[in-house]
Image 1 (cartoon, rainbow, N blue to C red):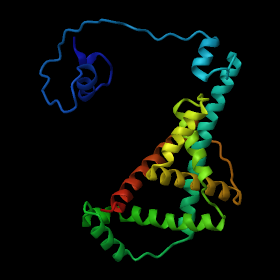
Image 2 (image 1 turned 135 degrees about the vertical axis):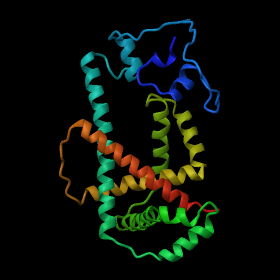
Image 3 (image 1 turned 45 degrees about the vertical axis):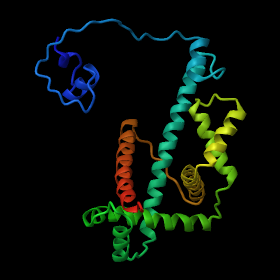
Length: 253
């Protein structure tokens, strides 16, 4: 059997790893495409029967009791997802606008020397390549912190605990009712300084976006789902590239 013909449009890397079970580091050549295959088990995906068991398994205990409620639950879940993505795009645009309106002169020569001296992995070439993303991230941090002070935004211990509690609930699909377990996991997360710093940044940004949204005019623009998904994909790719460049230059010894 030609394993390269088992599924359409599968390249050699996919065949080696998933059909032949070879490790990524395994560089043995495959000279022939004829293999003997023994089928030990076959399975088939079938549509589930609508009923209490399916509803409880998929949506959580007692959330849905009929097909109509199931469709409404799916609609709400998708709506929340797209609302979150739309808010993220909106905040990105607000961030770009704030950066545009608040140009901050920075000592570029000094910053480049500082990055080179404080990061053993940095080179002159990497500094030049990532410097724009690095300075943009630095400027945004200054603007964000000043805006938070102007709006009187603070991140409290209760805010962090609520954030971590929601994260713990998400691990269990939002269906965990054991408060002792939740509180125990939250307390452990609160002891992790890196986790607390990251959570604090996210909570601060959420509060800042809510404050800015309250004082600006937002014009809603309906667009097709495919176009919206592509906008999200491009925005995420750009953000990952910029963050990777900024992180490399921002790492200290």
